[in-house]
Image 1 (tube, rainbow, N blue to C red):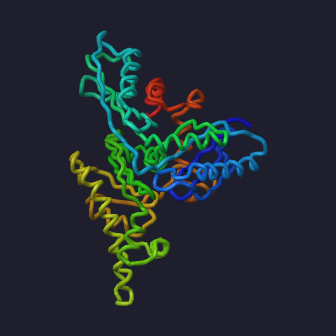
Image 2: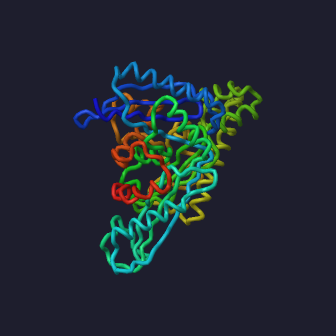
Image 3: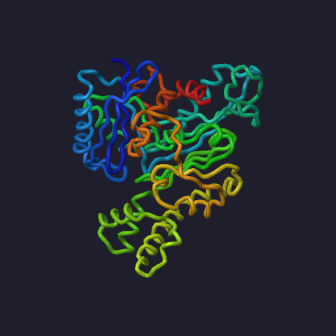
Length: 391
């Protein structure tokens, strides 16, 4: 058996993983497993031994399922409250009047070299576009005539201590991470199609330890951003304002979640639900207002012709779409239509994000990128190849 790929979702409270195999161009699920995330809290590995134990439990389960076959490739999905996303634009003069491969390689290396931040690890450099003479965006600028070439790229960085702890844990169980994929990149792979990107869409991805979003227009991402506000903040708000234990607050949220109260909640006996709705509403409204402030800064508020798309935990809260419409003044919808179909994973929201990672890695990774160390100077050589595959 060849090309077996394990995909891991490093969550705040659980770690999920699925093993895929491609047989005759068909994706086959060989095994899946979910374990409580021991030693991990709010993006910090507090107990390295306990965290490694969790990874090891999952691997042991896979070994029993695979009957001696080995995992060729490991891809890890991450959502982190301290993730940094920054956009870099670098340019160079074209001396020979037309763009050569050497010009492409030179700009790619510059972007990789300047992407670093103190105490952070660069995990992904995602090229956005090439710009010819400050005016025209191009997919492939090679041999085009121009005087100035610019490369626009988005850089994703994780806290170095978290990244190092992640790599060490997998190394201790005998696996080498091939790629680390930020959640918002994986989400776009299965939630946003060509029309969404072309007409203009805000994709809002609320997870347990951060909120990420990306704004698309004319096919290009205007940018990726993260907000250190998340699903668990709602639980804390309920615990504080309703004066209940944090576990009870979580139970209340799961059983009665609703951001905007439906009209039929009117009697005095249901006033607790009114108060609960106000608590939930306030937190979600704060998140949406921060996203909308960004739209205002780039002069896109009320101007995107398409919609706001709510995914993952954002889409599991009742009536959040009505709240989003009120804040953004744009059509807002829950994400429902999965563009990929792989067995029962396609209908299980617990594992949906793993599908996004799997398909992203299939499109933008190759055999030579396995055991890739993610150092900026090694990333540079792959920027051009990734870019060509993005379209």
